[in-house]
Length: 506
Image 1 (cartoon, helix red, strand yellow):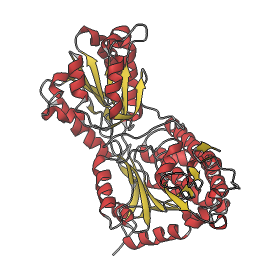
Image 2 (cartoon, one colour):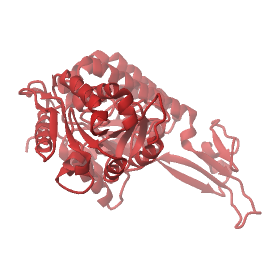
Image 3 (tube, one colour):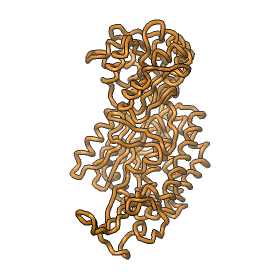
């Protein structure tokens, strides 16, 4: 039986560009996973790991022209957007190199023997070790920052875990190019190329999460696809951690005081944020609670003008385009739903931005309007007009988990609702914003890019320094002779690691 070809497709035309590879068979998945597992010890040296991450960043930057050209041809995201994404991707690799150098992620704790305790304490020393081979599932909307050389890969390698990436079918040529860059960087740094592997194909992705030598997985994609893989990871004879980012509505609440003070500014900002990247950001504000009546009318007028000027755009693939067109038609057809700017098909290969409005009262109880509380991938947002704070609370109480939640409050005067609303939004998301927009995720140590289900399947982040924690597990050594301890836990601290000794920073 012949191998199934993997094609690179131009989303601007729907035409095939070139055959890039073949879908991996179960036997091929087994081979690459075993190859990655066999070289995991090569990543034990933190100095070598950090050097590898920096070399990978340098080589990606050097190959930038070719990487951006390939990614634009497969995603239609445009050179400007992809140039920024490449810079972010390189910065992530360098940031994790710094994390590896510092060593705080090892979370070293030493508690000396203390017979005066009840019960007595033995000598205990704890740190964290890598889980093993990590499966990474590339995202459609970030061909670099959340794909082969992206944050999951960078953080897993930083933890000391070899990586097998399952490419996304929207950008297989970009995936092949980036994988080759990472593998060359590994060899330049004195590591085997097999610390980074790449496979293609839906069935290969399923085989990957089921493979007994895969120890954890990171995923960015749809609720349906992510949940299927999550369930497969949990159903294994030895279940593994599955860190999935599945979907997010990213609710926004605009107080009456904020709408009265600067409604036009908020409306324009919303229009820019929800249409950015043709609405294909996981942090797109997809649901907005705005005061009813004249208080919120100025905001909607500004939103209408901004969205009307956005123009049509190409989505990542025609399947997503078709889902967007049918999704917005379904929503616009519900009772009491209006479309001040109608979203939908902008042309044979494009979509047009828009938004719909609905009375918030329609969303306070279960019913057919629940579709408005589900993510619709693309340049559309739902504006729910509320008459009271009770309606706001009732709607927020029905929302699923999100990556972000945003509150817009008055800046020139007291806003009596601000504290209560912030408290109501906090349980809904991993990142809560005030008077800002969620599109754009800073790669900073304090960042959280995660949230309650279905935003993510685990209480963790895929962005920021603590993303490394997903690929580690703690181990304690009790009453172990000094000579047998790993260097990280020896009394003399030969590696100069930050640690806590008998409860105090040392």
